[in-house]
Each structure stands twice: as C-alpha cells, then as structure tokens.
Length: 223
Length: 170
Image 1 (cartoon, rainbow over the protein chains, first blue to last red):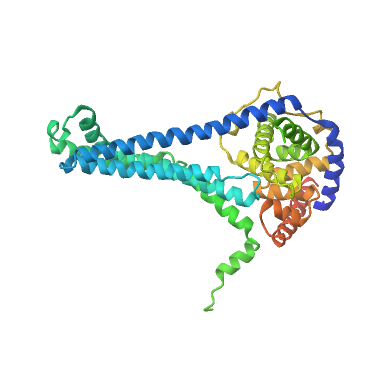
Image 2 (image 1 turned 90 degrees about the horizontal axis):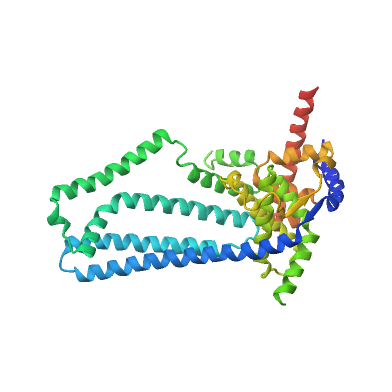
C-alpha cells in the first residue's frame, strides 16, 4: 500500500465529511468569546499579582536594609533575600514576556520551540524557587523576626543554633535530591521531556536523514 | 469592522474550513472527550488570533498553523485525560456516525498516523489534504527540500510497515 493510494482514499472520505460534521454555531460563539476573555484575564492577573507581590517584597527589603544599615548581621541576610526576589521578578517577567510573544499563527516549528523553551525555563524557575526556599529560610527568619517583631534572632538563639539551622537547610536539600533520585527516578522527567522534544524539533528542522547525521558525526577531517 | 461583523466573518470562515478542525482533532486525540476539548481550544485560539489575521495569507494556511500548534501542545500536555472543559451534551464539533463511513484504508491510515510523532503527524495531515510542498513548508516552518525528504522517508516507512503487517497476516 502506497501513501499516494491512501491519499486518494483520504480525499474520497473528505468529500463525505461535509455531511457528517456540524459545528455547533451557538455554542461556538459563546465558547470563543467567553473563554478567550477569561484566558487573557487570567494571564493579566498572574502578571499583575506576581509582579506586585515581588515588588512589595523588594521595596520592603530595601527599606529594611536602609533602616538597619549599620548592623550587617541584619542587612546581609536582607540583601541575600533582596537579590533572590529581584532574580525571581526578572525570571517571572521573562516568562510572561515569552508567553505574550507567543503567536500561534507562526510556523509550527518556531512556536513549538518557543513553547518548549518556556516550559524548560518554568521548570528551572520552580526548581530554583525550591532550592532557594531550603537555603534562604534562615535569612528569612532573621529578617522577618526583626522586621515584624523587632526581635534579634542572634540574641534569642545561640549562634550554634543558627549555624545548625543553616546546615539543616543544606542537609534537607541534599536529602531531597537523594530521595527523589532513589525513589522517583522520573522526577526529572518533565525537564528531560522538554529537552528531548527540543532535540526532536532540531532534528525535524534538519534536512539530513538520521543516517546522514550519524555519518557526519563519524566523519573527521583528520581522517 | 464591528465586533458582530467580525464574529460573523470568523464563524463563516471556520464553518467553511471545519474539516481541518475535524481532521486535526481526530489525528491527535483518540478519546472523544479530549477531541471536544481540543476542538474548543483550537477555536478559542483561532478567535484570539483572528484580529491579527493577515489577509495576504490563505485562511487555510493560517488555520492549519494555529490548529496544529494547539494540537501538538495539547497532545504533549500530561493531564489531558483528566480535563473536561465542556459536558458531553454541549459538543462544539458534532460528528454524525462518521467512523462507520470510514473505509478500511482510511481506518488503516488513521492507525498509522496515530503511531507517528506529533510533528510528522502534522506533516502527513498536510500532505494528505493536498497541500503542496511550499504550503507545507510555510505551515511547519521548515524548508521545501526538507518537506520532500521527509515525505519520501514517510512513504518508505509506510510501505515497510504495511508490508510487515501484510506478511504477518498471511
């Protein structure tokens, strides 16, 4: 059986389709107007809420740093948190920018590549948030206690307690990675899937056959 | 153009090209519930992009690009099975006893398409729908030579696979 023979059958079948498919016109109108609006609204809300929340955090941390400038034991953790918040805001806006630039009427290879890059970026972003949460909770505790209750964690708790907690953060992080690798070998699946699909896309855009590609890889000009 | 007029124009154009919608949904989703969801997502995306539709481009090319982009993303999403946007009573795309009218060859073709990766699926649908290499290249964003190479490779694969099946049934 040849593809061109099947193409003829497909075309014959195509002629019959007109009678069998109906578009629910009323529902179509309701659906596209309602859902198109709500999706845009959701995107705009995410952009606004995420950015506003992070801006508030950044400004507050800036004010905290300025107020406690002579005491590095408070300003250093606040500056760490501020840098993390600025990086998170930049990453969030980069994602939103990528999402807004997505025109589905562009060629399939272009859009799929952008979508997969965005997906990979989002996975990395979430991973970074989780890692920083394990590492930054102690500076956050120090700054929050000082900022909200004017309490000095360094005085309330012994230095050894603070050091132990920082070490505990690292330990939790290491343990989490080890456990996920041991019991959830598919934990990195999403990232692998995204990278795998990007590789498939690159191959799809490539004019050469897999055999040609492997022979090109095997070829060395020195031979 | 008023919103009403734009909506009417959009509805007429989609109605005229509804077969694209049908074929893309059928090739990317086996489950009828998922097919309805995909049809709805494609229509929503078409409407969202319709304001920027460039009249110099053929409507079918534009519609293929959007439908295939949405379908590939939908296909790759992991939670497809658990999502039900519309109830079974409110179907956007109604198909009247269509599978019964499919010949064995068309059925075989759908089975073969089902086994392809999402990108080659798009290529085969475009080819079967009678688009020339230039149009296929425009929709997919690859070169015409690449389209020709891939089509010839797919023809070879089909020949081999059908040959294996036929030998197996003998």
